[in-house]
Image (tube, rainbow, N blue to C red; front, side, top):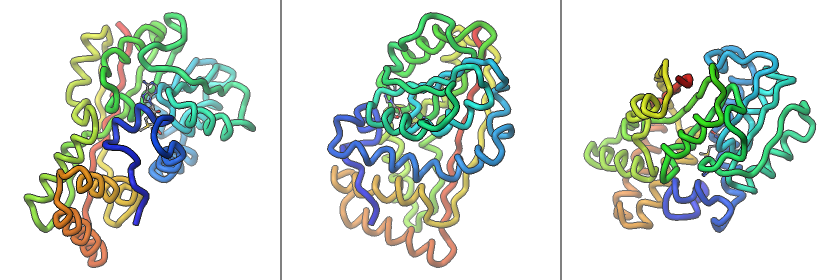
Length: 276
Ligand SMILES: C[S@@+](CC[C@H](N)C(=O)[O-])C[C@H]1O[C@@H](n2cnc3c(N)ncnc32)[C@H](O)[C@@H]1O
């Protein structure tokens, strides 16, 4: 059995990692669920970060950087420009600093809040925020802050899943549909990508480019172990699913995997925008 999500829902936990019963759970979760993407970014940094048009001397900020692994891959592409990671969790920042101890000197990490970025206006040429806005109570306030510290001609890059369009093959169709909606509602803003384009325009951004990418799992990979299974346990714990439903759902998914019938497809959206 996988590890349990320590508190009541994903977003509540992600905004207060240091106050949860087991803060060390979160770097483990990020390490496990980002491993495949990080591997690709390390092998093909130009392909993965191409849309960001990184080049030497640019100043990069990663808001809600978590363990900082993506920023560490970007840093050599902008050196000697600074690559700065900020996160509200001291646990994750300590983890990031430890990981980057032997890296290039242009990488740094500090504790800070997306709602109140500790930088003057127009400090950065590139700002990335990956899977952060979905957890925030007021994501538009964070967007306004990122707009403030982004320099003219800069680029903002936001990456989020669209949670309610998760496509999961479940033999009991109604149970599968209910699970997807409940999964989405574990996130504070599980539908945020649908609102991002017009919100960015309203926050003085232009040239908004939205790029969807589907990720398909045909076996019980990290998404099952670290998301589907622990969220199912959490939904049973909170009474959103009965224990019979939760057990039946997981048995069905495992049985499907054993017989080559497991199918999980999720859509990840990259949203790029420049300040007006
Ligand atoms: C799902 S993790 C994503 C981490 C990283 N961006 C990645 O994709 O690997 C969400 C991150 O947002 C951080 N976070 C939550 N609320 C924040 C806030 N108000 N300001 C800055 N970071 C925040 C969490 O501590 C966590 O590291």
